[in-house]
Length: 387
Image (tube, rainbow, N blue to C red; front, top):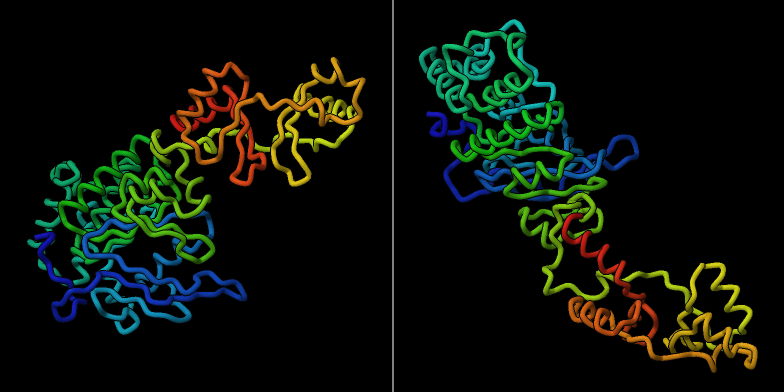
C-alpha cells in the first residue's frame, strides 16, 4: 500500500527526473544566497546536500515545498513547475522532517502519523493500516505505541514518529533538514540505518541536509556539495572520495578521503617544502648566520636561476671556509636527488639504502621542490593511513 499510491501531482507518464532545478537564483538585500543553480535528482535517489554554514543547502531544500520562493528560475517536481501548484496542495504531497521533530503534543502517535492522510480525506481503515505498517517497519509495536503521546517517548522514538508522519501519505519526495543533529551518537546511527532501510523498502526519493560528511557518505546515493550559493560538486560518494573537486571538499572528507592508492603515490605526497636555500655566490659568514637563524647544519645551494647545485654543511665551512670567500668551492653534490612525480616507494627504498638523512626533490626545471626525510615519510604515511 505505502509504495503503490500514485502522486496526485504527476502529469502524463513519461521519463522525467523527479526533481529538477533550472537556473534558480535568490538574493536577500544585496547578498546572493543561491547563484544560478541547476541540478537533477532521479526518482528513488537519496540525495544529500552538504557544505559550510550559510552555503544555501537549507534554503535549497525549503524551495522544494515553497517555504522559500526563488527570485528567478524554475523548480520541477514530477515534470511540473511547482510554481503552478497550490503551495498547500504541494506540501500535503511532500514529506518534511526537521531537527525539532514538530510532533503535536496533544495528539497520539496514531494521530500524528495520520495528519496528512486525514487532510487528504483517507478513510479510517486505510489510516489504521498505514500506521500499523509503518510502526512495524521501525519495530515499534502498534499496540504498545500507537496511543502514546510524544511526552511519553524518548527523543529517538519521537524522531522516528516524525519520519513516519512524513512518509504516511506516500509522498513522491521527502525533505529532511538535519533531522538527527540533536540526538546522541548511538540513537543517531540507529535512525540513519532505519531511514536508509525505509527509503530502500519504499523506493522513496529523499532530499537530506546535513553538515556531517560521515552521515552523507553513509546515506547518500548522490552528494551535492554547496558553497556560497553554488554547487561545487555533485557526485556519488565513491566518486567524491576518489576525486574531490576542491581542497574544501577534501577537508570536509577528512579521514574518509581515500586519496590515491599506495601504488600511485608520488614523492610530492611525502616531501617537506619551505626548504632553506642559498645562492652559490654568497659569502661564508652569511651562510653561517643563515644556518644559525634556521637552526640547521646544511643548506641547499642554487645558482642564479635557482637551479639546484648541491649542499654545503657547517662541517665543510669549519674545515676550509677560512681559505675561500664564497661557498661555491665548498658545494658537494653527493646527496641523492629525485624528481617530483617519481614513485614514492622507489624513493623510500632509495632513502633507506643510500644511508643519507634525506633526498633532495627537484622540479622538472631542476629547481628545488623540497626534501624527503625518514620523519616526513613516516608522518605522511600515517596521514595517508589514519588521517
